[in-house]
Length: 116
Image (tube, rainbow, N blue to C red; front, side, top):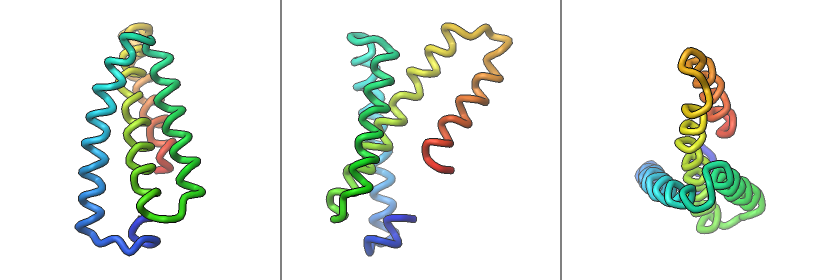
């Protein structure tokens, strides 16, 4: 919605942005998985979410759309790349009978960062 209102972006371009976001998420998930083998899952999650936060901070100050759009794609991809790693940690440490509760909490957490 932000891009449509503030950047004269057509629906076709918006669709392409979402395709780019999906591709970037796929690549960042592969990279974060490889990185987690070297640094550990928790540190990889912290770095991934930290990169997302830095990008979000950059979006608040960036004005030209050619700067905002790549920051938005990188922000979204880096935040989403941490989710599988967090779920794997949850699966390792939460007993099976409590996983449903924890999955619900993680769903609320993953929705809250996007503001939805």
